[in-house]
Each structure stands twice: as structure tokens, then as C-alpha cells.
Picture 1 (cartoon, protein in one colour):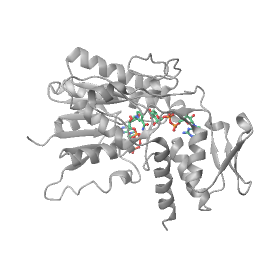
Picture 2 (cartoon, helix red, strand yellow; picture 1 turned 90 degrees about the vertical axis):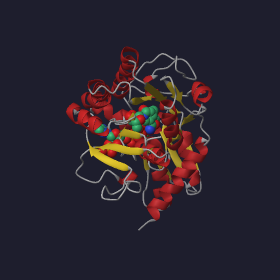
Picture 3 (cartoon, protein in one colour; picture 1 turned 180 degrees about the horizontal axis):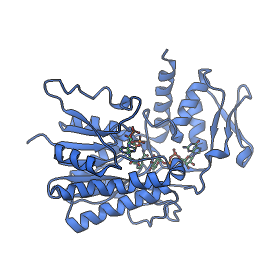
Picture 4 (cartoon, helix red, strand yellow; picture 1 turned 45 degrees about the vertical axis):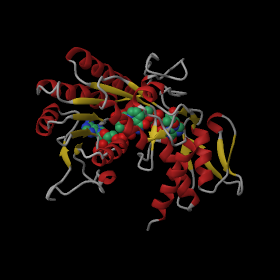
Length: 348
Ligand code: NDP
Ligand code: GDR
């Protein structure tokens, strides 16, 4: 078998780093698209990136941006990938309310640009395509749990942009016979999760507070509930979708939903602090049971103009057809993240 080549956009992000690692382990030649940045943005892939002067490198990086069509066409032409994983996105829901046009451009049109690159270059029969769709598309949902047939109702500029990306991917599959699949992925986290997403913000703060490096954690909606899994397992799901004979869309989820409040209590427990929540609404606070000190407070700035209150996925299609399921319970995920943050913060 000739070596398979994969192109990953968003390779410097959490999922890109796990997926690149997985594909290298599977013997792929991996090409990643990274953005030009004024400071290093390759921290998550430092250990797998190889100097191109090495005798036989299997990992390459290309400069590129989801908002730049000519650049994407050139990269796809140069790499001639067997598989493209489109993970690049402005992926922060709250930030999308402040940058709606940019989010639509990068997340929505960025997907169209890649699909068009495949079509223009005559690669529709050769290149398989994965789109990182999201449970945020369900938004104001009335069905629980959510599966592939649950209607969408996006509640943010991010979710609306991703919904466009989802449907345009489906359309290119139907219109041009492209092997294109969307993973409708519920939240997945890890020790390399971006620091402004709620789980990592919490585990980092719990570690920093227990080490005396931070006084307080400010959060938004503690009632919100999410289906949190481990990013490593979701990378495997992405790969499995592109190995199927027929392209299809699949929900990836754990089937368990946990509130932000409960995740916070777990993280502090793992940092040897017992938290007690008292009060209601914006006045609710988290106190250390032993010392009585207030450690968690609400900052209304973190509330979103429209919120997604509750998500819980049903991944039975992925289990039955791909043989994919999650093994790591969310309680263990919290523990792994706090432990990693403790180690990170203890370093000089
Ligand atoms: P991250 O935010 O960690 O990574 C996003 C990646 O996209 C980074 O490499 C980032 O580059 C890159 N990027 C952002 N904007 C552009 C742009 N204009 N052009 C090129 N690259 C860009 O996200 P995750 O790894 O968590 O998620 C991966 C994908 O999966 C995203 O599309 C996300 O929306 C989607 N998703 C994620 C879920 C999750 O729970 N993690 C769930 C469902 C879907 P840089 O490093 O320079 O910022
Ligand atoms: P989400 O993740 O919006 O689900 O999108 P995030 O961790 O940002 O928020 C989850 C829930 O926690 C509530 N929340 C807070 N969120 C943040 N970021 N900061 C806070 O201080 C805070 N306090 C409470 C939020 O209101 C929300 O309800 C993630 C991203 O990875 C998307 O790219 C992906 O598509 C979805 O998951 C599935």
C-alpha cells in the first residue's frame, strides 16, 4: 500500500494535535495547515513536528488560512491528499458574538473554499473529506438525547456558520459524489484544551488556587450542561468516518451530560478543595468548606446573549456502524485535566 497523505486544517488546535498524532501512528504522511502568528502557535504539536531537513520526514506544515481561497487551492494541489480533515475554525461560541462576520467567513465559507478546491482540482474521486460539525447546531433543542435526525436550531453566530458548513458538505456529497462526512461532535476536552473553554478554565483555576497562585475563579452560567468526552477518542471517530465505503454523518458523544457547577466541584475536589455552592442566580458563590473562603463567583460578562442550556448526545449510529464509543468517563476526564494543570503550574 502506498503511504496515505492526510491534510489537516487547524492542526495547531486541540483536535488537530490529537489527530496528527493518531495518523502518524497509523503510518500516514501528515500535512498540517497553520496560520501565521506573531508568536509561536505550534506548542501542541512541537513533539511530533519534524524538521523537514530530516532524512525521511512524515509531518509537514504549510502556512494557510481558511479565509484565503487561493492559498487553500495551492496547498491542496501541492499535497494531493487522500484525506482532508477540516478542523480550522474560530471555535469559541462567546467570541463569535463579538466577531460574527469573521466567524462566518472562517467557519462557514472556509469549508466551502476547501470543498471548491477539491472540485476545481479534479480530486472529487480521490480525496475524502471530514467536516468538524458540532452539537451547537442543535442549540435550542427539544429532543433528548440528540441524534443525527434531531432538528437543528443554532443559537450563536458560531453555530449558524457551522450549520452552513455542515449543509454545504452534505450538498457536495450529494451533488458531486464527494466522499464527505460530517462528525456532529459533542464537547470534547483534554489537558491541551484551549484555556478559555469552560472545562480547562476550571481545571486550571482549581490547580492554581490550590497552589496559591490564584485567588478566585469567575464563571458565567453554572446551570449549563454539556456532554463532555475526551478529544483523543473523538480523533479516532473522525478517522473511522473516512475509512467507511459510504460517506455519512455521525454523532460523536458520550451520552452523559454534566452541569458546569458539578464539573467545577469535581475539579476542586481533585485539587483537594471541597467546594460548597450557596446563593442563587448571579449571587451564587462557591466556598471552600474547610476555610470558608469564597473561591468561585459569577461574572455576568460570561453569560451569552443566547445560551444552549442542555446537550446530551446519542452516538448509537457511530457505535453500530463504526464500532466507535467512548471509554473515559467525564469524572476521569476532570481528574486527568486537573492533574496535568497541577504539573504544568508546579514547573518553575
Ligand atoms: P481549537 O480552537 O483548539 O483549534 C482551532 C484550530 O483552527 C487552530 O489550529 C486554529 O489556529 C485554527 N484556525 C482558527 N481560525 C483559522 C483560520 N482563519 N484559518 C486557519 N486556521 C484557523 O478547536 P478544537 O481543536 O477544539 O476543535 C477543532 C474543530 O472541531 C473546530 O472546527 C471546532 O469548531 C470543531 N468542534 C470542536 C468541538 C470540541 O468540543 N472541541 C466539538 C465540535 C466541533 P491557531 O492555533 O492559530 O489559533
Ligand atoms: P461550548 O464550550 O460553548 O459548549 O463550545 P464552552 O466551554 O465555551 O462553554 C460550555 C458552557 O459553559 C458555560 N460557561 C462558560 N463558558 C466559558 N467559556 N467560560 C466561562 O466562564 C463559562 N461559565 C459558564 C457556557 O455558557 C456554555 O454553556 C465548545 C467549543 O469547543 C465549540 O467549538 C464546539 O463546537 C462545542 O463545544 C461543541
